[in-house]
Amino acid sequence: MRRILISIVMIMVAVFFLPGCSSDNKSFKIEKPVTLKQVNSDGKYVARAFLESIFNDDREMFNKCYPDGFVDSLNNSSGSDLFSVYSQLTDINGSLSGTGYAGSKDYTIDNGFDESLMKSRICLTTGIEYSDVEKIQIQKITARFVNSVETVDSDFYFVVYKSGGNWYFLEFCKDDTGF
Image (cartoon, rainbow, N blue to C red):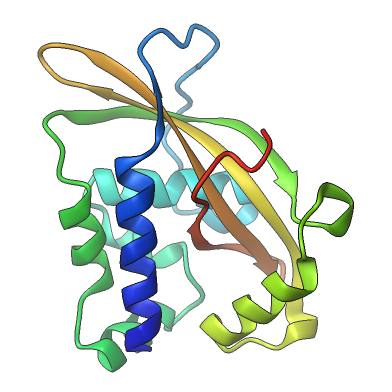
């Protein structure tokens, strides 16, 4: 589990320091914040909820992005607090103004992805059975950040998966994966 936490942190560093930025994204529309009830109902909601939770310091929303007990198990085995690690990495000079869904792509062979390898990775990370992974997607979420000087829109890419009828966050993608 400690190795998983270290991997998550390393991916976070790469993703948060290299997101796609644009200050004049006219097509971006901020959506209403994700509610706890919505989080696991769709891949776009769990991805947006994850981003909103870490920038808005919402531990309850953050925990909901993962299967029940997963965050506690990871925290206990690693000796670290995953939410605090993410929160410290996302300390910015400004605030999150909002997020919006910008697209998704199914994680399938037809779209150029090794679905079976990603399913195996999900199973290794979360402990769920291979056959319980119903669907995998990459979600593109745009976030608007503001401070007293500027407004910046940034695109983030997340791998999410569906299991037991619920959607969960797995990890960040390092690039736009063909969007």
